[in-house]
Length: 350
Image (cartoon, rainbow, N blue to C red):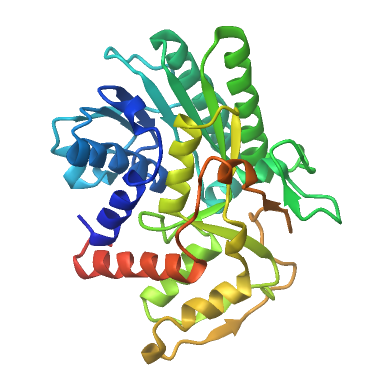
């Protein structure tokens, strides 16, 4: 196991989360081969190894080969090959569900808006139906900062009960509108059937197991530095985002599922606020011996497929009231991510 990933798992399970709720339970994770899903599965298996929790992990994926090999050979780990846009037929008990299956690539959102909205709506409906049928004790839906849309001109923060504008007639809204519909399904199943559904709205999250080919700027930047290439910006890079390292986000996800009384929590480190240009400058300086540079190549007409939102920071006050304390700065988190990628590359896995 990559040592960066292993250290992150130890950090997560050492948090003051009500882990005992998971002892002896069966936990189903959709999207288990993605970054969020991989960390969720890894956390559950590390609880078994470090604390003998006896959790049975059910990983729902479409491609088993994308799962880490160390997961696949374990007896406490079961793989279910399934498309979440179709009904489930799970025979074993399911006590908790973490629904993390969703396209995250802007390229997919641009080229496959139908598949994107289907994954977020149908996938949520069928996993909630499964939670209802199994009498699951907990259900966690992984939502997104994008559901808030564009804030008002004088609005700096998004709280869990404040919303901006999303254009439903823009095909790129397949992602935020699909997420919004999925959230409504969660509260509807909660109201009508008593499903204990929770919602976690993630800000920009990054770290080990993120794809460096999915078209997001942080992925492009990391791939450039990994390959010793200059970073090329297609804009002035003035857009500001907040970035949260994956182990900090995972702490927030499990804290929302197991500790929170509220239905929804924002997960985003306000202190991780950085412009796209500042992030690029930070990354090119990580290996000064490579003498990388930041280059501007701004096309006429701008870029397509990116989120049409220019501002709006998630307030994590609700989650912080539950004891959430992000551990890593943007610089520390991206340094860890780059180190993880360098190890993976040296060992021939990327």
